[in-house]
Length: 337
Image 1 (cartoon, helix red, strand yellow):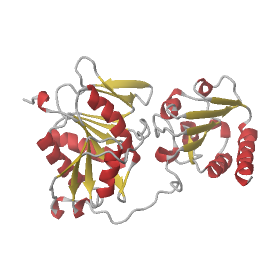
Image 2: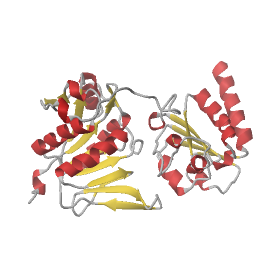
Image 3: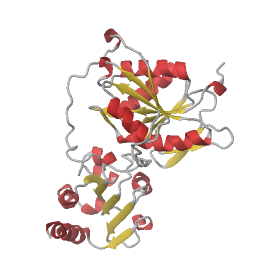
Image 4: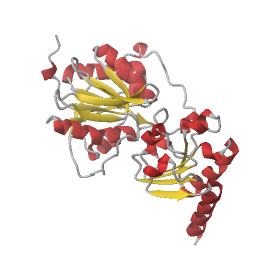
């Protein structure tokens, strides 16, 4: 029978792409540190890859108390078999209490595979993390029933507790380049014949030109109020002058006006930019849950009773077809002055 008391510390899987850290890992380091501190434990970054020195330095500067590093040519690119093998062996050796993984394409692949190997639970697609006062276990919060309810889940009987967490839910801390931490290098290799997939090439997905939603500091989103797909051009023009990413509500995606890759909300992407501009979005609870952690929210809607105005820092009651082009023009004039 498993002795839960043997399992200590909070791990964050640090996902990389082309040798660079994805933001979600740095976001989880910040929140993971809060969880670890509550139980008098360490926050530890897990780095797997090739030539990861710069990544390790970044992970330490963003708050890791310790880093476990596994390097090898076979880990240059993510693979289910290779990365699962590494994580499985590390967990069995070090016995962490919690593993936080970003709910990215790779994270959603790795998390359940690892949980199955370890015969423990996994809570997917979380939007909230806390400590349950009674058990001191992690309270994982995620959307349920199509986003109509929020469920809080405990993994009471097994360890480690594993969860995938949406990018953009939490904020990164400010990096401290002077910070130092212990780096443990582990030699774990996966034979080539055990890695059943091979990355041939990266294909850029249509619609991902420019800044990605999860990493954008400014997002301009459009909703049902735009009326038709062609009218997204005014949203894109404003985004261009601001150097922003383009987002949307679910209604715009369901209508076929824009790619699902750009949907913000409980059934889309959770974002936390410095500025979020919403044009023609009424503010359904599912959409608000995906962007309410933005630093500044600017809402444009002709309905003065639109729910989005309840959380907006700046509310503009007006016709978006007049307001957005005027705002774009003012910004252009300011930039050229």
